[in-house]
Image (cartoon, rainbow, N blue to C red; front, side, top):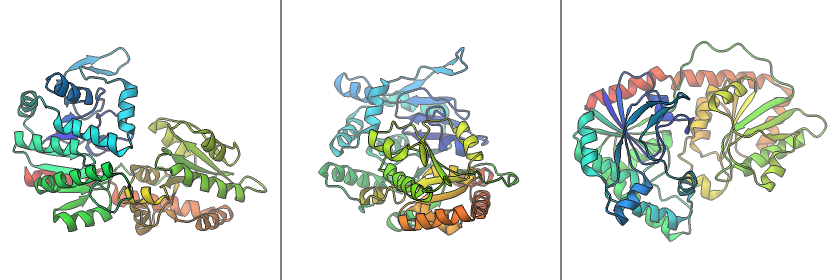
Length: 428
């Protein structure tokens, strides 16, 4: 089976340590090629053939007439053991800025860059022809940039296309006062309606989005979530004194405000003595306000960034793995279908899982439905459940076991890969 993967980000497990692409495909009996639309060199155990297009290439195609896109040549391995390639690297600060653009106008400008830029069609055609894919797998959130690539690739091969999304890219149930946001939204909706007719299966992370897309598009949808290998359950571990709660992730979408509410609740519980400590592992540099609220050295501590491997060791020595989502209306609507891969990491952690978010968020409803986590949607609930946990630590043991059962039941790598290969074989 030859699988052509389309992706927005580079397939690099060092840059994107939580990469679901590798998670799904590692060890699969298949050959992979990847077309990606970002700078940096790929680094993973699955794929060796790459075609790259970047913002800079697209800009040059408009200003200088240079066609965008090239095959990435593998140049061997350096002294540090890292694979070397001919992939182009845009200035890090520039690309980080482009990724972080949140203003509707600038996002729209970037989308027009990718709509108007000129691909190197001949190089792309040769890359696809040389690989001869059996199927196309597009792993992305729908944007004009990615949807145009899908249509272009489908015009160059007869291979069937399968798509995946983990975000709300189509619904009008959003809160924004920017006309540029809505122009972009309607452009994506129009392109997605055309593209979805070609998808053999549209994979989603959440049950809610699966049902919504089946209703509005009438297409075949399936759940595709992060997976892992589950052996025998680990030996029951003693609960720490004080109880150690871990949050690993970013502060964006005002998640830090939810963490601040949790820190406040812990302060109330720890009034007389320290019963619970919140440790926060994040790449984000905290502001003075965030540091004041989240890093008092007693109830909540910001630890900084760690690798995925280090994080799993930290989880193993902890009691509660925490997941949060913003309570702001704007972000609640924007992320309601977003089933974060962090939730699956929490399930894999060996800890009890706690989710503090809107009770209509897909992650919350999943954990509630599967009875796999402690689900909290208000400060009052949080105070009650933390107090209860402090007086009865068996709750931690019970929910760590329930999380293990959920993972084994729903997130087995063997089951996920069998589903994908069966789907691909049915249409190839």
